[in-house]
Amino acid sequence: MSERRADRRGTPRGRDGHVARVAAAALVAVLVLGVCAGVAVAVSASFSAAPPASGNGGDREVVSDKAQPEEPEASAADDDSGEQQLPSDDERAADLALDPNRQTDWLDHSNGEKTLYLTFDDGPSANTEKVLDILDQYGAKATFFVTGHEPEYRPMIAEAYRRGNTIGMHSYTHDYATIYQSEDAFFGDLSQVADVVKEQIGYVPYLTRFPGGVSNTVSESYCPGIMTALASDLQAKGYQYYDWNVSSSDASGNHVPVDTIVQSSCAYGSFTNVILLCHDSGAKTTTVEALPQIIEYYQSQGFVCKAIDRSTVVVHHHINN
Ligand SMILES: [Zn+2]
Image (cartoon, rainbow, N blue to C red; front, side, top):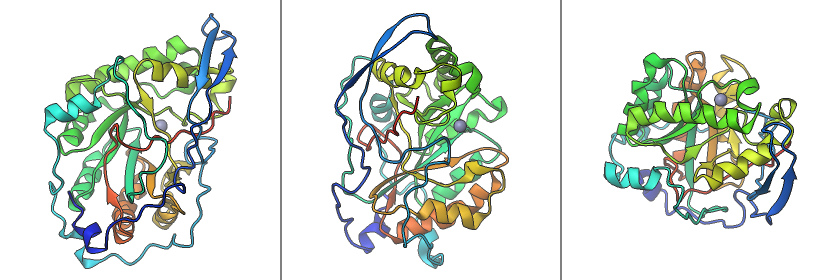
């Protein structure tokens, strides 16, 4: 593991109770009239999460006076790639593969260990390889929630996985009007992107992220109540979805200034388990430029950059439909 830096700075301190104000809310049974899918479905919302968000990037409520990144440290690049001891491919597949019959004891609060889970939505893209190289340079791992866009870059899904990162599904079309029109439409799209991922890594992973997050306020205009239904049904099928508790703000436009992305990304407040929303697309060049500073800052604060797995805190936003 690349904990060399963390070790040097002392053992990460636990601050249970702060993080992820992800309360395991009581199961709230909600009857969603089947105006979209044609049937009435009884659903339940499980965790409700801390930062409400109105969509990608609209969630930043974590403010910290520690948000100013430190100067890059000369030693930051000392970490060689491959330092982290990864499980074998078989072990990773066994952990990360979708298994509807598997019972996972999902973590709904911080484990107290300073951990940064970098997440990249919307790739693969012309920038994916650059992102992977930066991650390797810092001994960092990340999670990629991929799409069906830009088929020519699909081999980067396999490459990201080979380098120890986790792959999850985002959406094949990423078209809100298509995927949020009905449950059938959503799961049809999900199976398409699942096929893309399986082709690259050999199996369908359990990880997903909704376009716009589960808290998006767009889906409602296509099908009221659909996020409540999807959140429940996804989990019933063995998937888990991950929202975020810190946003890089790189979704607010293309070419968001590097400093803005760095400051937003590093404003983790009291969170110890940080799931950071970033985007991987050809136009997001400033995200790539900001990445070294983001990783250096977190590492200087004792964080270790890991990829999501079944032991990772599950951050769910509040559902707004
Ligand atoms: Zn997206």
